[in-house]
Amino acid sequence: MKLGLMLPTVLLTLTVTGCNSYPPIRTADRVDIPRFMGDWYVIANIPTFIERGAHNAIESYSLNEDGTVATTFSFRKDSFEGEQKDYHPTGYIRDSESNAVWGMQFIWPIKADYRIIYVDEDYSHTIIGRLKRDYAWIMARTPQISDATYKKLISILQQEGYDTSEIQRVPQSWSEPSSPVSGSIQADE
Image (cartoon, rainbow, N blue to C red; front, side, top):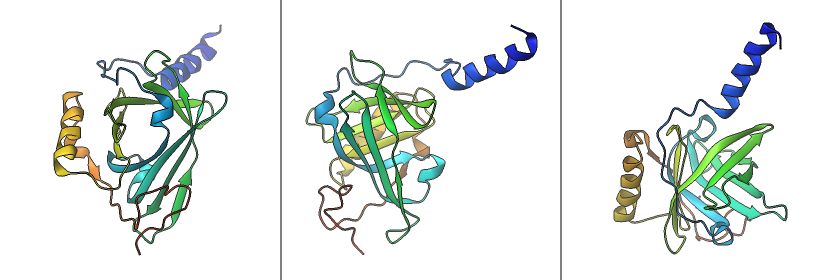
């Protein structure tokens, strides 16, 4: 390979795969994929650029026949009456032993690191993180959680090396806590 082609190839490889100089991050021991599917309200996060100002944020998962995960991420931009935003990435389960390490593809060919750090026994609360510890999502099956549960979930992120001062609450206001992505409930006006 010519030197002129080698540098761009190495840079592209490092960009897509990462340099993996990050300490390990704990993930859930085993994720029951069918139980994990469905709607999750985003309670708090370290937001990506598209999520800044999100209200009524919901992540919804559905298992495809080919084993990929159809994902719908929806929210209102900057207020409860703001513009509706919908994104449809695809999840790829990378670790079939635990089902806790995924690649999340918003654009081809990049699959972003997506790790289920924690899911409670009844699948009512979860934490999604990344090896880089640059983004995180605390999610629940209901739009509100108790202060005690929130503190517990924040503590888990802190134990995994996250700067928890970067975590922001996501405003949620719903008339009923059921199937928000499918459109069967309305956000409070």
